[in-house]
Image (cartoon, rainbow, N blue to C red):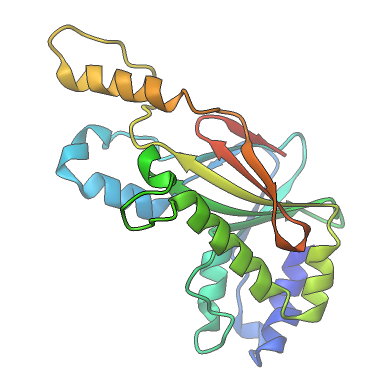
Length: 226
């Protein structure tokens, strides 16, 4: 499993004592969800988004399909390599694989909660669009890991290699909202939900990336099925 390479081979490559490195992960067999804590904090700090204070904060829902998955907090892991070239600024959020000796699928994942206009090319902070930015971050995360040869062999020999962009639209509520006469805010949420859901809810934007990885998107509340 990838955990052993992250714990020993990769740190040694950068002259770091493996005993000083933690691999932040959890193992789970049941369906689970993940959140983008940075986006949630930013969202709830905005006065105009006070109506989202009760948001469930889910960004990604995963159907394990009966398998036990190891979820590595990749961003937190790489932070331990301060002072080395491994501590890249642009890195993805998660690295996921099956547990034990199973060697079928590896998934790099970037999470975000943004309005749809910022996911597409725009005039904001990410002019190329957040989707393209996430793709770039996942590719950089892969490339930093394969600098170490044994980790590279492990990663690149997975039959299924995926870069998953998981995102949620700010204005898609946790539960359906019905239009109400005289309630302008609720009616705007209804409209926003309808517009957002015009976008395909199933995994989409399939394309081949470097090193044999497949890029795909899953938009909340759709599940990523392992």
